Structures are given as C-alpha cells and as structure tokens.
Length: 491
Image 1: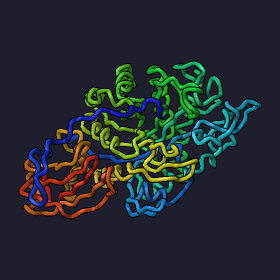
Image 2: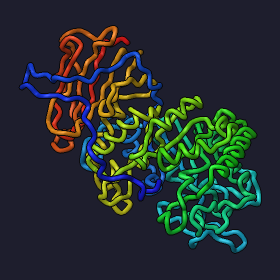
Image 3: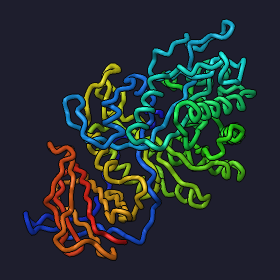
Image 4: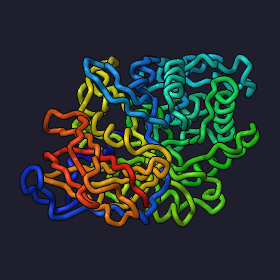
C-alpha cells in the first residue's frame, strides 16, 4: 500500500438516524434504522490482514496469532483482548534476496534487514525446478510461520500477492521500482518467468506447507509510479492495464500447467476505487473473463464506490476490499469507511492492511510496533472487534439504508447481527425489525457489546437491552460503536 494516498480528516457524514434520548428506562428514539430482510448484499467471506511486513518483524508469536486469528480472550501487552477471529490471510511473496548471481546483486546493496524487503524463493534463473539449488525454501521463515499459526487458529482463506518480481527479473535489479516513474521495471522477457515463479510457490505451498491459496495476485497497486524514492523502501512495480492483462494471462497459464486451475487470479488491487474502475474498463473481454474477482484498496475514500460495484455486477464478479489502513488510532475512521464500503461497494470480504503495524505510536495499526517490537494496543483494535467477532463467514449481508449501520443474518442460528457507529453527539439509536417474518418475542434479550472511543468501555458486554415489539434502541455515547445480536429471527 501507499500510505501517502490515505485520506485523513474526512468530513462528517449524516448519522444513521435522527434520534432523541427521552430519559432512562422507557426511553426510545423518534427515528429508526430499518433492516431489510429481503435484501442480499452477498454472502460474507470474512475478515483478514496481510502478513507483510509485521510478520517478518514479530516472527511466529503464538500470542499475537491468538489475538488476531483466534476468538478467545488473550493477554497481550498488559490487556485482555478479544480475539479478532480473522480468517483471511494475504501472504506477500517477496522479490528480495541477498544472493548474488555471477557478481550481480540486488540494488540497493543486498540486504533483507529492512522489514519492507521480503526474501523471495527463486535465487536465480538457472533452473525452474523447485528442488534445484536455484530455489531456497527456507527463506522468509517468519512470515510463513505466522501463516501456519493463523491456519492452526482457524484462518481458512489464503491469498498470495506480489509487490515486485524477483530483483533479477527487473531492469534495474531494484525491487523498489524503476528510476523512471510510471515505467514497468519487469524485463519484457520475464513476464512468463514471474508468473512461473508465483505458480511454483503456490504449488510448493500445496505440496509441502499444507496451504492452498484460493487466489494468486501477480501485481499490487500497479498504477502508482513506483520508484526507489517514491516507494520509501517497500517493493513495488508499475504496470499499464495492457501489461497487467499480459501478466494475468501468463499467470493463469502457469497455474493451470501445475494443476492449480481452481486458484483465482484477482485484479487489480489498485490504490483506490477510481483507479480500479479505470483499469477494469481498459481490460479486454478475455482478460475480464480470466479475472476471478475484483480486489481494491481503500485509499481514495472521496471517490464513488458504487460505480466499481456496478461494473463488478455487470461482469458477474465478487469484490474484496483487500487493503485498508488509516492513521486514526481511535478506530472511528475504520467504522466510517468500512460502513461506506458495505453500503456502496458491497464487498464480500474486508482486509486491514496490517493489523500489527510498525508506526511507532502513529496510529496506523490496531496493534502497534515500536521500533519493531510490540508496543501498544490502539482503541481501533476494539472497534475492529465489534465487526469481526460478530459478522462471520457465511452470513448474508442485509441492507440498512445507511453506512453507519451494518447488518448480517445467520440462517442456521436464526440470528441477526447489527453493528452501528455513532460519529456525533450522545444519543439513542433505534432499530426496526418489523419487516422480518419473525423477530423473536416482545421483551427478548438483545445482547450488546460497546466500544466508546471517547470513554473507557472497550468491547464491553451488556445484557440490558430488550425488544419492544419489533424494535429496540440503545444509548450511544459520542464516537462509539456497538454490536447487537438478536436470536430467534427469521427472514
């Protein structure tokens, strides 16, 4: 991701409903959010994170894995954390190496000490045989070990992505990008070799790691200029839409040749919604057909998500929000943009870039690294938990008519989940379930969980809310998020 493109200080948007508190006990709101049981915004696939670069820095820490991928209570950094239950892992296959080839070495001086430079597996071009000395399967141990820990805690969806081809496939031997902005650094004769590299890693993971990647993404944010200076130390490579199309075709062929026809190739993992739509519109029909899913990153929040959604529907493609981050440690910006995504983009998965981030107190990560060590837990961790612990894979996403309220339905458990954010002043929010065939009984308990980012509550569980007919309401402090679970509900 390119942090320079993250929008900050977004203007306040309209709240979920106009409500007025009328006092304790019998109080209720005078406006309501109506959940529509006839709507279907897709079957939820899950929540996730990319392992780069934090997994390289942290290493295979089982407690961190428990916090991110488990759903129990975890003691970490002096706090009791609710496990986030992330089930999607994006694995960044690297393009860096300290291995020199006949005196030729990666630029800058070969080193993988920087946490943004990830070791790749193919050391040179001498042999495509993964059992030969041209391959080092002990590379990138920390990220791979964390992927195993995630799998063992319930992660079930894995995606491989590449920020840059191996350094020796590039024009300038520098995986950070070309010296010329908006110039593809991959040598023209190495498109097939890069695709073969990715497919070989995917096959090796299947055969030896117990990991089946659902999808393999050969590019990442390909529309950005990607120069060594602009990339600020991370790997990256620019591709035009035509070059992406070529690489998509090559990757499809290489996966198929290794018996991996079932692995999807997503596109485009562009930096923002408008970039993704522009690239998609430039793809030829054959490329669109080959693409299995649309991935997009949420770093241009001022653009229209619905236009990309319309294009995806027309092509019969699902959408993943495959990368998002912000600098608001409170978590309210997550709630705002996640809600906008669910209202207008309609993704079936949502992935935070790095749930553990090396930002030295800057607010990037729900869990932050300080000088490459675990440092603090931001309030945004608990805000994220409000969504990830309750909206679970397999649920049907329902329409609420507002980005500040997200609803999901579990048909097997007959359970309705509502997650609502209040960005404004203290007030009641009211929820109307009158359109459901069955909405439990009058007086039924509605479990709720609260994170008040301006107060002291952090994912606190309460059993003090009840149905009044087919409505219920709850008091929301300013800048708070609450999750509700209503059982005995039928569409």
